[in-house]
Every structure is written in structure tokens, then in C-alpha cells.
Image (cartoon, rainbow, N blue to C red; front, side, top):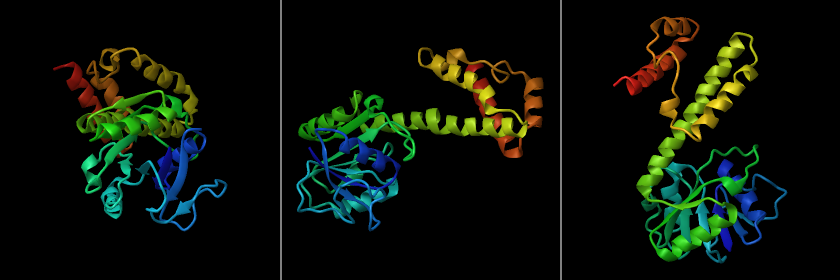
Length: 249
């Protein structure tokens, strides 16, 4: 299966490595805005614009959300299946391309951190059965977890992922700042963090909730607020109120 990839960011770099190490896929075009590719050690044909003359089975767009419609306009004459990789962008942003789809890997990607594709859920979407089958075939070469979902489900999944990943990561960052300020090693909190996430894999998180916010322990909350910056205190109050409302309404 011959693939063209548009993009040079975190996800694009991981896709390059994934397709290059897969025996059934061949990356025949890598397209980016820069004159040279980010990694010089890969022998992949690199271009600054999509090459209509090169046969491909799938063109993947792995770029920032707000640039997808612009790139789609440049590809409007192609008959190739074109899919974007965004979680919160409508497939219709690829119009007026004839064959369109979504190839959404549900993971947070950093170019410097290795990725095991075999357990990354890949969510696919397309308007035609033939295109669904192609996306499913390619996705299954990378991952053991491939899901055909609707646009509405994808948006809700992406929103849930922001809470589970982005927000949690931010909160862990706040915890790291607090322990650093107290001259304590962050490793002290790691067993607690690990246990919190592992418990949620087999239980409803709301049923596991503990802490001063749930039991409305105003005295303890006041002590916590005394050691926080104004910005972190604001976040503490919002989260505490949300926890209290969830368990006391």
C-alpha cells in the first residue's frame, strides 16, 4: 500500500517511522513546508507539495487543525482517498475532494518519545465502504485496536481524551511545582499517581473518589489554599467545587 503523508510535526514523524517499519506499507511521498525533511537519515522521497503524478493509495494529512481545509483545497483534483488525523475536525473540511476520511490515532505524541503502535487505538471514518476497508486495512497493519466510529463519537472521544490526558498532565505539572517548592522529590507521589490510574482501568472513577472536596472538609481545603499561588488556588477551587457537586447533588 502506497502512502503519501503531509506534515512534519510530532504525529507525522511517528507515522513516518511506523510506515517505514511496516512490511505492507510504503511511504512514497512525504510533504512538508520546509525545503528539507526533519530527519535526514530516512530515504523517503520528500517534496514541498503533493505530487499528482506519483501513484498512492492513501494521502494522510497530519497537520494543525486550522490548516486542514487549506491543504484540502490544494488536493481537490485528486481521486485518491484523502484522510486527516484530527480528533475534533469534521471530515467535511476535506471537501471538495471526492474520497475523504479520518485516520485518528488516539494518543499523545512527542517526537522524542518512542511509540508502540500495536496498542494505540486508531479510529477511522469515511463515506464509502471501499474507503472504510482501505483505512481499516492500513490501520490494522499498525495497530491491533481499530475502531470505525462516527464524527459525533470522535468529537466526544477527543473531548474525553483532553480530560484524561491534557488536563491530567497539567495537574501533574502543578503537583511537580508544589513538591519542588517544598524541596521534596516528585517520586514520593509516583506510587499514588500510578495507583490512581490503574484503579480507574477496572472501576468507575467516580466510585473511587476520595479527598477533602468530596467530604466538604473546609478546614483542610483552607490549609491547602494557603500554600498555593493565586492561579493554582483558583484551579483548586474550581475542581473542588466540581467534585463536591458530583457527589452531593
